[in-house]
Image (cartoon, rainbow, N blue to C red; front, side, top):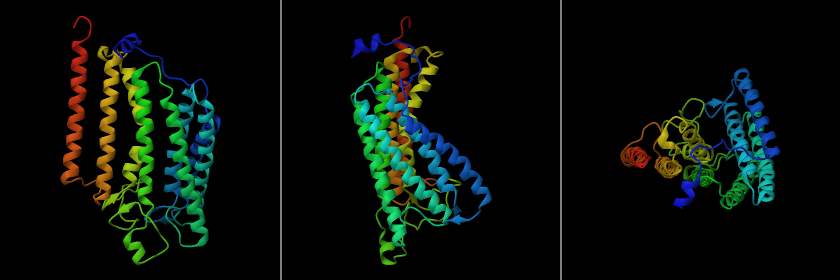
Length: 321
């Protein structure tokens, strides 16, 4: 391992796939267009659903799907082994995501909810299709993740960053399943809704602007969102380190970059766990307290200390230090 790290170049060319998964790229472009359309509709149509503009939800999903699609298109383009599997998984993912966004946009246009809505046979059918599509997208991401495991890159830090991003992204996506079970209060007084984002109160209460995350109780969308976008956050953090390495000598050491990626990935995993715990106990993201607050501070301090330690040791190991 040591010799491998020592042979790696101190600076790397920016990663470029030798091809892009075209259906995913087309989907990303379509979602960019849909974001603009829903933004315009949010201004034109002030109708609200659960306390938010009806078009905010499809706009948020268009942005999220677009980012996910272009990331997956890039990731599949990195594959050398199992590329056919990756291409098939990418195409099936497109189909699943199109089903999901069509249902969400259709529900917004009809001024009703899309998620957890089983009030009528039509709503139940649409929610079932969307739920199945979400499961399929998750499974396809698992397949791409498995393919990534068998495609290590020339730089160890990049390999770890991509693998950690995929793994934590899968965890974040899986957290959505915690929202789908009917709450006890819903079963006691059934109103056609089975499942919720919030914990401890009904959906639709006070929330953060645009995001809508509850400011009164726990909200499972928070760890779901943060975890899902580990797929972008961790590789982008490494890319930032590589760019900074052009000016900061210690970051030119491949071992230092690898250690920083490992530290960052562990901290990110801890953050997902803490946010999930916070949501499940009904505590709002804007009011951390007790064990959640202590764990959050401990994670931040531990992360900062580990980063400083890695940089100091790396600086001492530099030639001429």
